[in-house]
Image 1 (cartoon, rainbow, N blue to C red):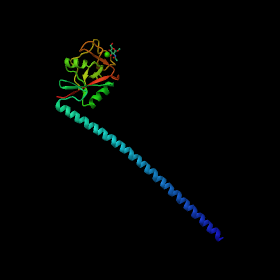
Image 2: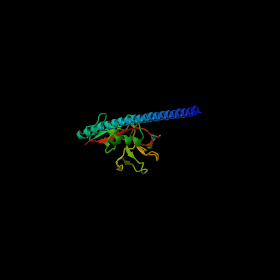
Image 3: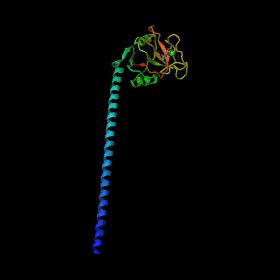
Image 4: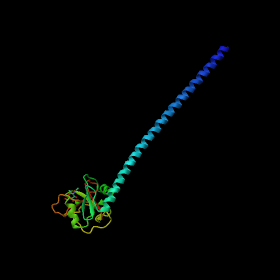
Length: 199
Ligand code: 2F8
Ligand code: CA
């Protein structure tokens, strides 16, 4: 009889001990998982911080270049200078809107053509390229990217000619050294020309 009691007690103790071990094990596993999550978050945050630091460094460099070029009326490397403006001719192709955003990110805008000389200068790049003119707001009312209306134009004969073509580009297939504008759909991709005034 006494033996049976001791046996029950021993069994109860063993089961309790077993349960305790399981709980401990679960706790340790939980802690390990928590630690792994913390480590992952830390790594992600570190990568994000490094990316932000790189963007910050690039922006600082770009700002310094901008300040230097504005101070001395100089153009950044790879830009062309004429009178008081610097011109950037893109190597790749984008839609008109994305081209404009690219210019803005460079502290410039799509080129606004204010004179026959400037138009001839742009045409001489011999590039099919967007410039800063659109009638996307009101069909038939062409405006420059600074909001001013178009007064003097250099449209190729028969242009602008299409209700679906709301953005202007300078065409490189025209023989004329000046007259070369055409309207094409804004969502087409083309090279583009940015202008930044420096004096
Ligand atoms: O013939 C003029 C006409 O030529 C092309 O369309 C066939 C141009 N389109 C593009 O360059 C995308 C039109 O804009 C131009 O008016
Ligand atoms: Ca056209």
